[in-house]
Length: 65
Image (cartoon, rainbow, N blue to C red):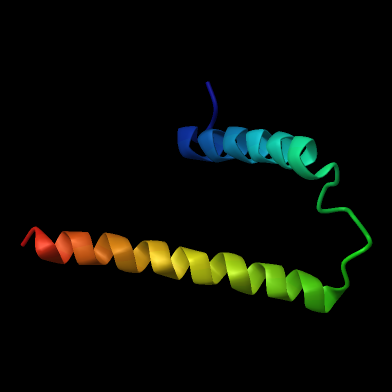
């Protein structure tokens, strides 16, 4: 039994995501063809997507009140 089931669930999802990424792109985040600015741009894009998802969820919650 894992110490924390939530941590274990995240660990399994990270592993699965890494496997999908390797199959889809053929590279890992250890790649060296992207500079630090490029990695920051990737992070910004992912965080902006997360904000859009959060907004969508909040709107649905508000509509159900």
